[in-house]
Image (cartoon, rainbow over all chains, first blue to last red; front, side):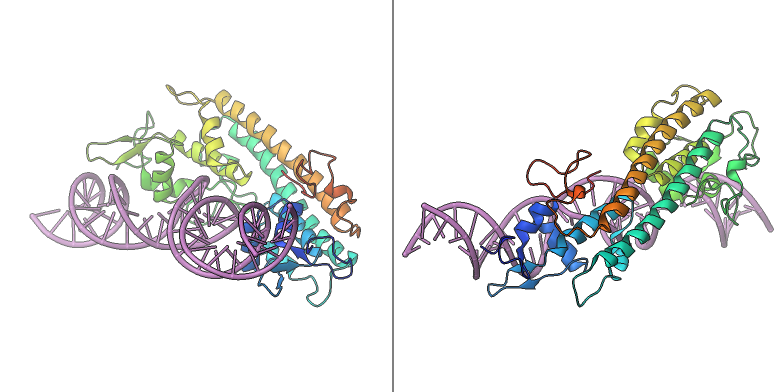
Length: 152
Length: 152
DNA sequence: AGTTGACCTCAATATAACTTGAGGTTTTAA
DNA sequence: TTAAAACCTCAAGTTATATTGAGGTCAACT
């Protein structure tokens, strides 16, 4: 039984088990591997085997995606995890801080967005050129001709 | 000159002008039209003409997208705008309230996410089955076999 | 009137993030 | 030992959101 039940010392998980435990499809795990987000080794019969920490990696990937972070960005951040050993609490904690900062950024952005949407969309001013929304107070409104709303 | 400078009474804007003023490409305006997010009529030479409020519509579309709302959802919400007349301050204001609620929802979700990411990813517990993250306290962790983190 | 820039349509291409399927091998379990 | 379940690879398909390009028309300026 090559599933999670082996010796706890250096367990090796099958792709099906990881899929079930992490809530993603087998094909997604294959896909993540091609994108270097996770990795595995092969057994004699060429089947993938994973270390248990892959479960945490997948969880982190999904959490980050829920924050609107792309796989590419995620890959870059995961690259900070140690390559040679199993990540420790400290390693994950560092990642967590990283995501936290990103999230705070996004939350702040969204709050500004919300306030602006409220303040301007409903403001009734039909003059686009004079509406505060349409002109920079926040890097918005670009060089070429104004009129760009809420560009990131 | 069929650009924004005509008589202000029922102005008709060209696609190029709208593109420039709203900060999107002409092709994007075409695309939005095929998706029924905006509309236009044609002049004698089969060229698109727009009413000025299209600028506000595009701005709203972009703002909503920045909140992570899909074009389909946006279309549904825009459908609440009057079809027969130019939207008024009140019309836009109603939309604004709608987006505001959505945004508040998302912000709350993100804040929960951030707190959890902080609390769990860095928690050091390596037991996935016992980690609070991996088991429902929030509709997370599904029927089949647990282990699903931060689903929506 | 002619040139140039703006427009038109329609099909193809692009990117992200997966999913599906075909055709074949390995593992598990009775 | 053999059937079923799980796995493998690789190519193609899917959805959302556009962008690009070819081939042709229209409008504005001189």
